[in-house]
Image (cartoon, rainbow, N blue to C red; front, side):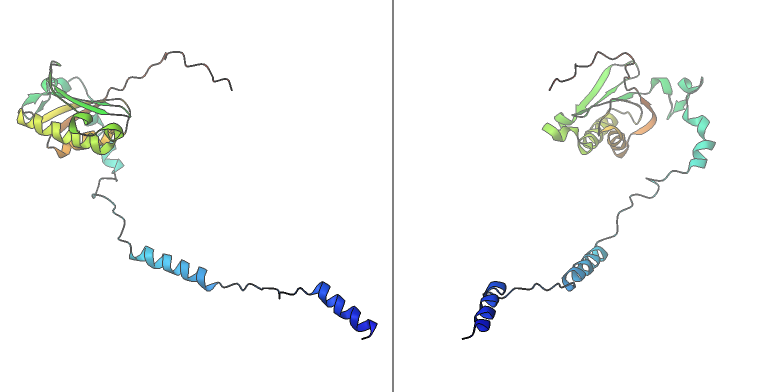
Amino acid sequence: MSLKTVFLSALRSITMPAVPLQTSRIHTSACWRKAEDRKEMLASLPAKDEGTVGEKTVDIDTLINRKAKFFPDASTATTLFNGTPFNELPICNIRVSPNNTIISVTDHKGVLRLIRSCGIEGFKNTRKGTNIAAQATAVTISGKAIELGWKTVRVKVRGLGPGRMSAIKGLQMGGLNIVSITDNTHVSFNPPRPRKQRSL
C-alpha cells in the first residue's frame, strides 16, 4: 500500500462520516390541502345570522323628522297613553350593575309593587351579571305587571352593566308597552379621593 492510498483513505474517514447524511424533502401539497380543506369547511358553514329585519339598522332621516316627538315638552305630563296620563303611568326601575340586575315596578307615586332580581330568578354567582339573566328577569316581572293590570309603563334605567339593553328588551318581550326610557345613571362630578398609588 502506497503512501498516497493511505493518505486518501485517512482523508475519506475524516471528511465522510460513517452514517450517510440525511436529506429532508419539502412537500407543499399538505399546506395546499390544508388551505383547501379550510375553504371547504367555511363554505359548508351556515350563513351568518343577521338578526331580525330592522333590528340593527336605523333610518336616520325618519329620526330627524320625528325629533320633536322624542323629547318631553310642557304637554307630555298630560298626554294620554291607553287612557292614562303620562304622569300617572307606573314606573319600571332597572338597577344595573356588573354583578346583578334588579328590576322593580312602582306606581306613579313611587310605592313599590313588584321587585325581581337575577338572583331571585335562580341565577347564581357570576351568571347573575349576564345579559341573559337580566332578560329572563325582565320577562318574568313584565308578566307579573300584566297580571296586576299594567300594560303601559315608563322605564328608568340606572347604572352600567351587561343587562342594560337586554332588560328593556325583556320587558318588551314580556308584553309591556314602553312609553319612555329615562337614563338615571348617577354621575359624580366630585368623586371621592382615589387610593394612593402602589409602591413596588
